[in-house]
Image 1 (tube, rainbow over the protein chains, first blue to last red):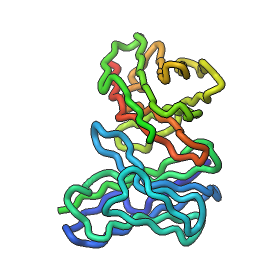
Image 2: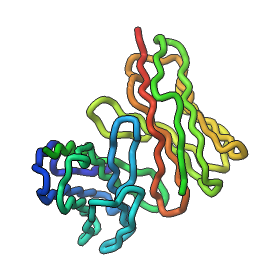
Image 3: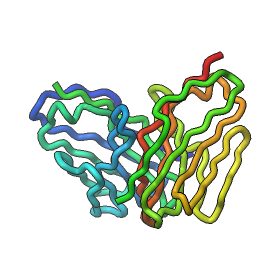
Length: 111
Length: 112
């Protein structure tokens, strides 16, 4: 059974703080993704990675960066959190062009 | 880039009735169309998918149809049950790398 684990389920951060969201998958998947979920907007792709140390911008990369130093781990970084980044963040992984598996999500509130 | 539109945004059905959710996409190169179900507080999970060389696929009470010419695909749920209540997302894959473009979601409520 594929497991995608997001270490932080609920976070509250202050405006201007640096925020790290960590994601680990245990299926040796090459592809990893970060999506943001907001009501009425669906799931929007922030960044994705097809291999270690590789990253590609998605549809809404502004204000975010990512790191993939190891194949199983993909981190999302908010350099200076803002209130409009309050949202639910979903990490996902896949192999080839096959099924994408999601983590449980990280609820981030920026105050 | 690819754009996926999903309708309706909310759908209320009586238990036992059918539910239909429709999506359109813009990129003719899209070749894979999955549907995800997200229950309250949980992760989205794949329930069915269809590839561009197939027109219809069924799995028990759920079915998906694809019309490549019109660039639209639909999810059909028959004999709905309360446990079908969830948010459903359609998606398309515009390239071979694996990233998905999602619709905005449909909140389905099945009332007993």
